[in-house]
Amino acid sequence: MSETGHLDHPEDITAFYQPVMARVITKQRLTEMMVLLRLQLDSAEPLDHNPGEFLQISLPGYGEAPISFCSSPTQTKSFELCVAAVGNLSEAMHDLRPGDFLGVRGPYGHGFPIEEMRDRDILCVAGGIGLAPLRSLIKYVADRRPEFERMVLVYGARMPDEQLFKDDLDVWDAREDFETLYTVDEPDDQWTGRTGVVTEPLREEVQINPERTTAVVVGPPVMYRFVAAELLEKGMSEENILFSLERRFKCGMGKCGHCQLNDLYVCQDGPVFRYTDLIGRSEAIEVWAPEDERE
Amino acid sequence: MGKPLFQAAEILDMAIEIERQGLAFYSGCAAARATESVATVFEYAAEEERRHIETFSKMKRDLAEYTIPESYPGETRSYVRGFVGTRVFQSVDEATCSAEEMADELEAVEKAVELEHGAISFYTGAKELVRESEREIIDEIIAEEHQHIRNLLRLKHDLTAGSDEEPQDEPHSEV
Image 1 (cartoon, rainbow over the protein chains, first blue to last red):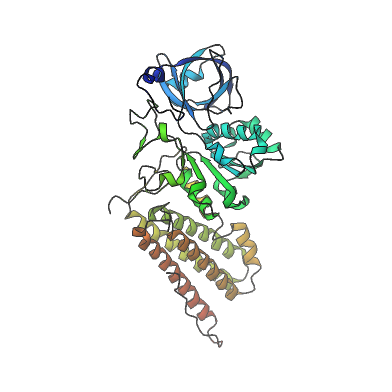
Image 2: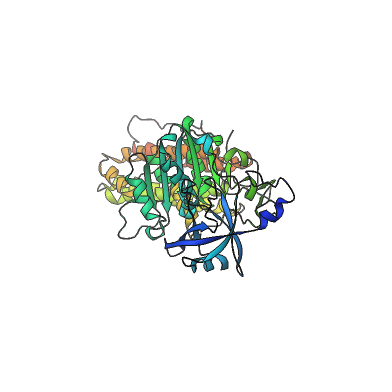
């Protein structure tokens, strides 16, 4: 199999569909809806993933679903997945305990172009559970800090209780070589930080050098175009804006068509796309307004 | 080249949000000012905003509904509000302070005209964010704002009636 998950030989097909077993090392509840699972392959070998890539996770009797890595490949002995309870499989995953096993295949997809991002300023914009896949990149940058220039994280959650990875947020906030801006849309009585959606601190508080900045955007579908508008207003080119899109993956090998986005397969060509890659693709409705169909 | 990030219906949502902000701003100004004549100017400006909310809502009804699934109820509105932000109007608290510092009704009209020019500037920028085929709708919004400015300038002229000041024509270069 090639680095991008494309099949090189027909005999790869069996290996492609064959899950390997991974054991749950720890389980941590992050919010009411989200748990963090730390896992290790039965073989104890590293998965050698890139930030932004994903795994197909399976549990017998419940099915299979794609989940992005939320740990950095610099963490070699185990890997982490953040799981939202949104269906039968993910709810069953919430019931897993340390020592339980699940099936994994992958890693799949195109992650963040790390090599191109070295020696550049990194601006991460995350909304809601979009912080989970972005965490794999942020932790990578944290572990290899001298290889990157500025590191800016703008993170918005709906409310304080829905903030993910609070321990990490505190650690990143305390780092002198990280610039962090956290906001919530619906504050509670205890919240003393910023209020509003993620685009507000992005517009009002973040100054960037557009020539040397790579922006990485992961969040709910509604968020993308508003963030794009702010980034373009700051002078960024579409070439340097990366979006990680979420689609319903099934096979992970560009065969089933579930994740098709015009002529692209998100499972193979994405989930990380350059903004320029999405120009003219009408099904990328998160990032471009579609034509009024009555025209 | 403009980026078709939004549909005209969404710019109308932003316009309605701006008018709501304007309504709150002008109402705040009217309530804060002791001088009746200044309050009258701001009440007039607030009424114009109310009328625009109705106009833009009617315009929106004729356009296709474009919705992206929300991750929580009201998410899109939050982003619209965030996008509009303080690009045109300040907060109501700032409006109150600003109104309290105004010397007379002429200054109040001038402030309102300045803010409406800010709104036109916002819509002119927003035109670049919709498809060319939909820009006519944004021009209609801008035309409404120009009419608002003309009404304010007429009011200013009426206020200065008796003085030597002539009514000024409102420039139309942005449309």
